[in-house]
Amino acid sequence: MSANVGTIDRVLRLFIGIAALALVFVGPVAASGGWGWERIALVAVGAIMIGTSMIKFCPLYRVFGMRTCSMD
Image (tube, rainbow, N blue to C red; front, side, top):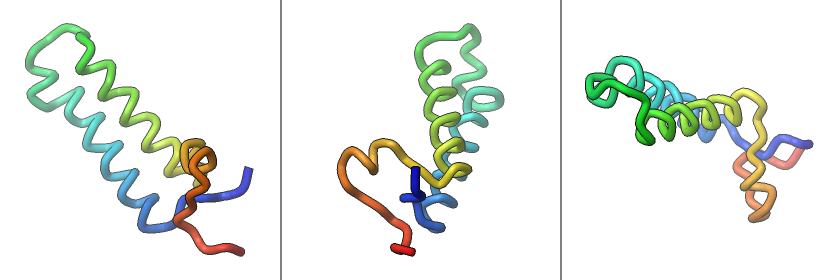
């Protein structure tokens, strides 16, 4: 499993993941109460974005033959 996510991509993924999780706990989605599909989807998106940012690997990039990091 070689890295295929570059630095700018990692930072963007991290910010999107944090924003998604913030919406779950303090945003308008949190005010609605309950764990509807919106909150579950935001948790999944946030966790996936933060996870792929941390491990520098995106499985979908591998499937589509993409890479945003340099070839070392």
